[in-house]
Image (cartoon, rainbow, N blue to C red; front, side, top):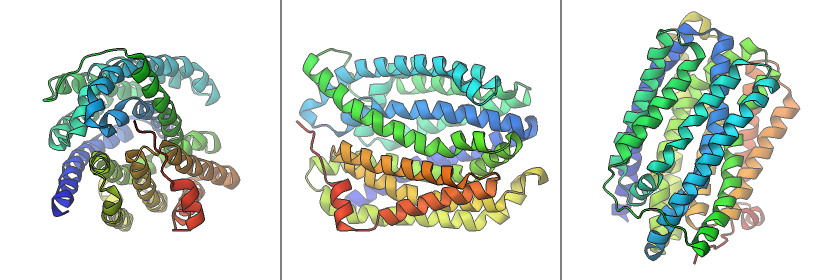
Length: 413
């Protein structure tokens, strides 16, 4: 058991180091964009990124989770057919994002969104070159290898955005940064020390993977919408300038919390899958939640430090958002417990149960934001906090609810 604890700590540590490096460079991005763009332009850039991230998160609905989770005897066929699925998913994503760019720019009455969103769609066409290799690296728990390369890609993206912003490229700086990330990602992971299975089409396996991918697509779409719901609704409810200030508060606050969450759960999922294959997952769950509580405590520490690090790092015009940043830090706390629960469900192939949890969180967020109809960043942040508190209450061990939501649904062979 101690060995497994060490593995989880090592996985999380490497991924967290990667996220910390990314966040340090992200500060340079925030500095550069805050200095180069107006509040309205900053809001436009963040809204374009939010729309892009919704589509990008859907990449997790491909064959990746199944390649990481499957039994060893199924790995070759899953990897071969999964590679084909990744090409199909990425082509559909690129086409869909580029097609929706114009309607989104009309919906938000912001012509600059069209070019930004459409150009970012290009990156999906290169990801499938190395997708399966990345999944196999994660399945093998080679998190040091993965984290170093992931960190280099994120550093390159963030620093290139900062450089392009200083060169007066404006909102398109974020597009060029995405292109840099995708190019370096392919180069660094192409030579991963994992077995290459190639691409194949086996109808029964392909159909099975597609069926499960469809379930994961719904789950990831719901998750992506929940993560970006405040941005999508805030862009309509708040004035352009106030929305820009809200985006800055989210970048300065939730960004770090989200990085901690991402690092922990990215390191956790392959380990949970390994535990499930060895029939020892149930006994490991209390330890998982203990680590989750430790990560959550860091969110509270960050909220307490907001009044100190914001004035130190940012100029006066951006310092009116202390309360908003604190509220958003606290609102991010329940998400790590939700993500941990969903990782456990996914490791057990309980995809339908995971979908129910994600859907509950999405509806709760949407209803709260719609009912509050906030007209300023502070009220908007309060509504986000209120919805997250409802998630946390729903996670309490009420047997009837847990039986309905968390009962495993086996879809294994």
